[in-house]
Image 1: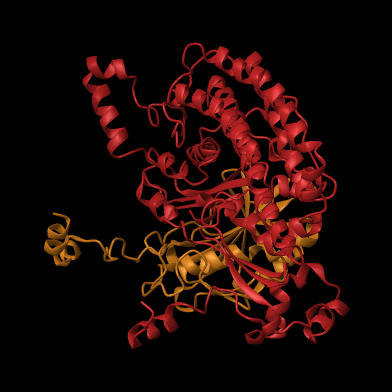
Image 2 (image 1 turned 30 degrees about the horizontal axis):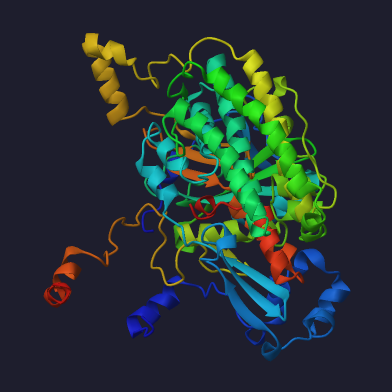
Length: 451
Length: 188
């Protein structure tokens, strides 16, 4: 469809305000160019003036540079991230992420699903840590319902258990992909292998390896199966020697360090200005973890450390995630010790369907079950924003309710969506090979970026 | 786009006995235990600037809402519910607190000043709000669509956006018209 007829051209004029792609330097004004290279954050006024005048750092012309596409099908872009890079030789001068290739309108879908069904939708956003998505959605709905303080203790601790195990599996996947992107291909197999053990546990508990829809408004879908404690202990016993292997294979290895140290540096000021959260923000030395700083569930009752970096480079982000696996294991052990007995969901007839056995003996229970699953439950009018710490940073859920059984507006603040804004700043004047390391260290999940 | 919500729907949710709480002169309300400040579009950027000086250093989230089919919502006195709303969630790292800012955006003039100069991290979020709701952000450095293709028609998260009208390329028609017979004979 290379030919654009007149109606299409008119449409383009009406609806788009311009092209999304990166444009060559000759078409840009000095101001636009300054913004694209991140001058707002990086340059002093004198440097910016020099740059705008076309001297100093900006003495390139179109014929000296080349704009190339990296992605959307590049294996190191973790899905369908497309970066347009302006290169001079092997140096990246500018970078622009272009997203939307995985956009499926999940926020729109969320408006057509009841609060009961909503979990199936949000769990597919960040498909590497689905339980955290379900958790933030459930917490938001519970806050609107006013039952956030009445969730049974066992449900709360089960949520913590699953959330931490999911953090471990997500970071293990990061270890795998980070290794693969940098050429440590055997690491890819190890990372997937360890993650598989956690997914097998999820399958046993929730019935599915991913997209569980297990954490629901009011509690969880089911209780933990018999023998769950042994399975968790097996994971906890299996991991430490494997993590020690990772240290041998990666952390202490000179090639690995050379590839990551000093690459993709970002400061705390820049990270905060760009809204980056999670390991990116912590790698700059700023200890900000919602689990500790604005606690939810019972994170204020467990002992764990917030891992921070010093230099804000790719190595710090790698090391933070590796050590966060260890911290999550610490939390999981405490959850095992403290897991209370009791109900796994709130016994509030408004949100909780009757037990399966009751449906066979009671007409009212059948009607109740039918009503909850066809109409859903009504949620009071209002709006609420709830945020938790996902493996990638702050995941937030903003729900505006009009008092019906479906969210009037359901918005998810996806950490990856915001975090990839740091790419142009980290990549400026780096090498193409380092660009791969930088994308990998941001650990974006494109399902969540595009939603 | 056409029907402006009824202004009488604006009700004061606060008890009238004590003076309504304000923040920098803007009404402060409580939504399920969370602080929400309502601000007029004209003083929106100035307020965010003051709040940034107060410690709200991160604009953690920005999204649009289209209240077309739900016009009657509670807003503090002096605020007329408009069709669109821009909701900004701010985070204060030092004092560990959050604040939500809500701005009413009328349908016939769906523009809003950009926060880019204060919080560069809102760039992608404002592009998303433009893409999904058609709220233009004045002086935004890159006011293009972000999630939808650049030649897309309409703004999908608007309540009057029709869903399911995009023709599917591989429909039954398409299959029928495809040169099937020759292909199958060639295989035989």
